View 1 (spheres, rainbow, N blue to C red):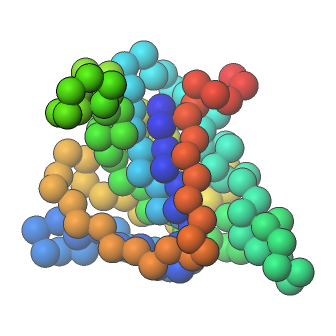
View 2 (spheres, rainbow, N blue to C red; view 1 turned 60 degrees about the vertical axis):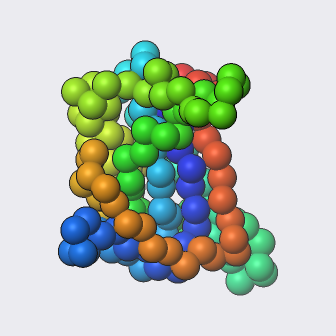
Length: 151
């Protein structure tokens, strides 16, 4: 399971010109579910993200977590994170989990964020053509893969 995490002052996702998810200070999380991912991947990834200390404290040091700053999360499903660009110029998405597998894991990941203390978790619409707007804070952007975390 892959995530691109962006620290934001604001993020919003629209589908068909209607806002379906919106947060203020927090994380915009693009989430890619790969073949072979399981609930344990969602658990370790959500716990890591919820506890990451990447918000600045009074001394301007990255020392505070999402819950420390009463932040929110906007989670967007994104199968293109699973792209293989090693051959040719057209990405191969064969490593992306099928929607019937990916959607329940996406929902489970969102639930796990809340279990790890993130009070407000907003979502896009799985599989929809989404328009995402954000105001990046920093910018701070982090790439995390559940395969790299101790399980």
